[in-house]
Amino acid sequence: MTTRRGFLAGTAGAIAGLAFVGCDLLAARPARAQATRRQVMVGGKRVKTIDVHAHCAVPEAMALMSPRVSPPNLLPQLLMGTPQARLAAMDAQGIDVEALSINPYWYKADRDVATRICELQNEKLAQVCAANPDRFVAFATVALQHPDLAAAQLEEGVKKYSLRGAAIGGSVNGEEVSDPKFHPFWAKAEQLGVPVFIHPQGTAELNATTRFKGNGLLDNVIGNPLETTIALSHLIFEGTLDRFPGLKICGAHAGGFLPSYAGRSDRGCPTRPAACPGGTHGPIKKTPSEYLKQMYYDTMVFSGEGIRHLAAEVGAGQLMMGTDVPYPWTTTAVDDILGAPGVSDTDKVAMLGGNAMKLLGIQV
Ligand SMILES: [Zn+2]
Image (cartoon, rainbow, N blue to C red; front, side):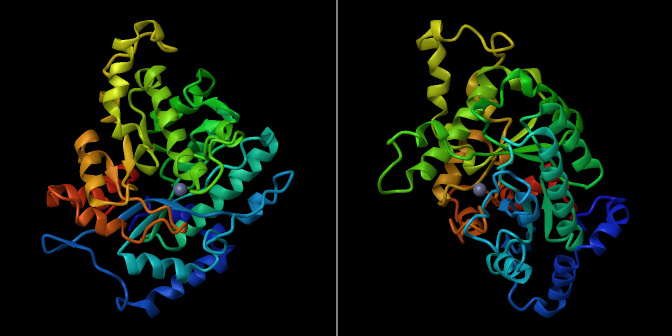
């Protein structure tokens, strides 16, 4: 069971109101039995696998935006409207649990609308998880453009809905998440001891130029990891991670480019001291790359060698499997970890699910 004590009882009424998901999911389980479910083994033992980068959407909440937000192309998978297909895909890849998140589209909404959107989404996420508690957990959605509201939504998400942390963007309407205005949110996340999953939404400033135009999906393949790189860098260099040392940050897409080029972050200030007058909270307390070793990352680098390198840079204890489902980036997330060269079985088990179990409070 992944469900925290008291949660099911507290939301039983709400679950009954979401029959289309709950009943479908529950009914689907016996029929599928073990026939097509891949059992991931390491060293001869069954391993619990957890995907920390898994998306969904709640169309009723999207409809509250004005102008109305168009659902992404990949519906209905994003909507969880075909749960059997979603579970079948998980079974085929050997993924036992998905940690669901919703990419923010509501950061321009006023306080009232943002309140309703996040409340609805968090309710729905809780219902999906409660309907199949051994397969889904979720991150709360929060209105980070209203930091005090976001803090309250996170607390409600964790305490009322048993959500496991929050998922946020890599910036908020052009403002960095290290800005002191967001301190109430970071303080609450630290106080609750829950992780914050940072997922980029591209770099809007560059999208407005020609730099990412042309062949190659550059606004995504470069723009997304770039935004995460910028977000994590500001959390380090502005001293946010010193101000809130208990924060559990998880960077999507393996932390962007940052863990692949950590040495340059360390060399910037010694090379050009005048460019480093101190962050928001004065001089930072550690070497920049040391902060990388206290943050978490998904394993979305698409190769065993990439995962080996990531583990060498930040530590295997900081890595959790990610797929970006239902976007079809990969179907080999499990295999990439299993095939990572020079990585011990113990570390593979940790990356496949052990680290996520601890961070997200998922029980065996
Ligand atoms: Zn994603």
